[in-house]
Length: 311
Image (cartoon, rainbow, N blue to C red; front, side, top):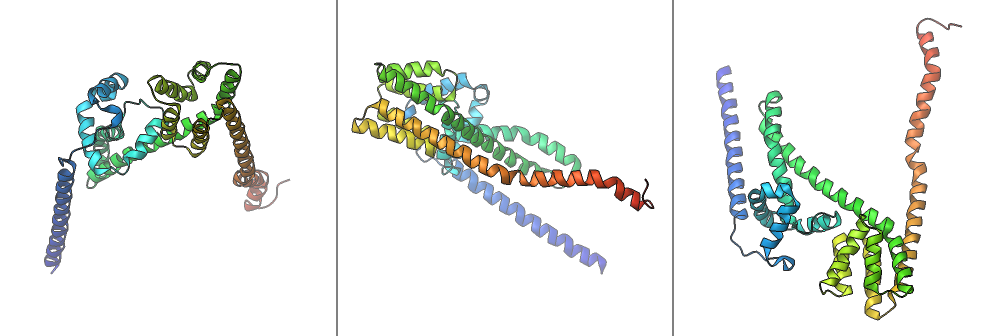
């Protein structure tokens, strides 16, 4: 009787395993067919000659230079599989200050390649301690690696935008003083970029200056910066500058007004953080008070537990 029950259990496990393997093969086949679809892909307007972009990217990133073919293979898959997420990744690449030669699908492929390189190490480690499910755990950790790299890109973009917002009003003040002193906008912008050289705000306005030198209008250059940073506060400031340019208002006056607005918002953020500080310190304060009580009363409690007070 026991052997029949064991036989049924083994048969049940075989059926479950067969279904799981069949489902995995079906899903993998669908994924390969979807990824290798021969649909025509639209070339980015900014990079009509993609070979030029690739050559610059090979010089800028050694990882891309050594694994270009693999990253481009991942990029082709990403265009089909993760098309909804690519615009957000592209904005984060621009806000993080990464090389402008990166496109979203290739940078995502770079993350996936790093996770693929880590997979053998995950598999070796978990196979030693969790023999049966080592491969599945290794796959899970590889996916977590991609998620961590994606999260790191997002945090890097947010931090860089924060640095830009901190220096934004000072740069606008400098541009205002220079333009009121009689310099043109391009000369003032060039001087401001030189004064803040090395800071992210100088890099962004340097790109605005480069765009205008290449023939773009002020409106187009500032609009491109707004799309790169994708921040509500920066977008409102840049939008006011674009509106002033379209309406013919003096840029010096617009810069002065927007720098004051940025300072007011900065003061408001500081007041909000100060108001939240008391609430955030409540739990650490309670823990410190509890620890102090334990230090003071602990010896007396131990003496009572051992048989009485000792004076």
